[in-house]
Image (cartoon, rainbow over all chains, first blue to last red; front, side):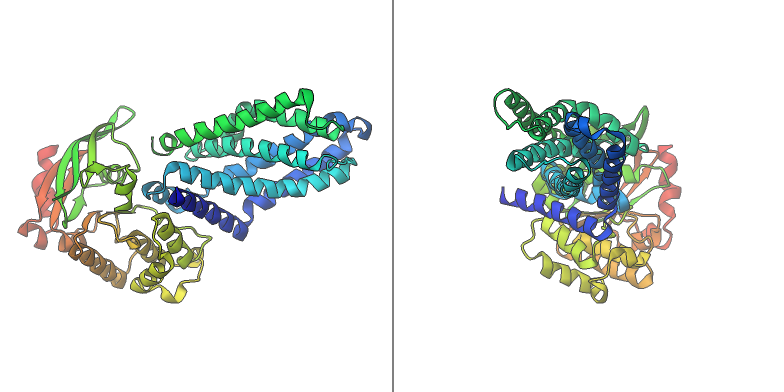
Length: 225
Length: 234
């Protein structure tokens, strides 16, 4: 177990170090998110913004996520690095969880830039229920990352992977996105996580657990065949 | 002791059989030259032997165990067509990374050792993307050897290497043999391969045309094997 964790952390650290040196995915993702937020700030009437805010925020996160996730396994095709990883004694599950952890960290970095910009541009106090908001963002981002990393592995050898990844990920993500949007909408409109909206929280947690377990189980078949 | 055994291996790509009933046994401590024309199926076979692909039919065992078992993979070193190194990491970081993935406690120390062994100690902190092709290939050789594998699988290991680097790799292969490791290398550089090899396997159109000890005739005339055995499998 110790070796498994050490191997997963080694993979995560490698991905983060490589990204820190090139900043390819992070720069593109942050710039893209800010542009979307700015464009929507012109397009939407500020009075009606509280109705759309939850949905808008998660649309931005999921579009930004696609840019980060596309690079995840694509990075391994350069110099056939994926072959060395698959041939090594690293369990496919550790490889997958390491890459997911790195993607999760990168997406959180993008979101930590987006959230203040979102609050500023739309004059929304997203921090009213700060810890509840953090929990929803963490759970939603984990769901997005797990599904995205799995499909990144699945599409790594496709010529049209930049197109295929979002095409495959978004339909699968619908339950988690809906839950995250509803919860975010409620929090931004002054409703704490209690009562009726707990069903969405349960859905989000259930989605994360099911898709993490499924991905960890199936990733070896995806990578080796 | 049998180090590697392929038993009735078939591999289909669609309807096309890239490998047809391939079977052989390799004794521990052998150096095997895996030979064949372009498209004969050498790379497909090496990918199956290294656990990167599964056979459509048949089985491959390394030291009696399944290739995809984790303890088995710890005993294998693979150098494929690509160098399998990260351009954004330094030479030392790459070796430490793979050392850790193979569970080595002294990954940093081993990385230093193999950097020196392959003559890359002066560029240990240089990023791989700044390396020449030959330096990248030498670092890939160091990556393959860092965990001192018992079975080494090379796909065209001499490509991109200059004379000096070829001599270094030949020495490393012989040292591995002395330690009891088994080496299988696919190559078109017949002379270098035959010089080192104790055994040869010739693949022709997906089938084994010859599998056995290196013959005296091959040493002076590396093309002899093709001329003598390729016709038999056609």
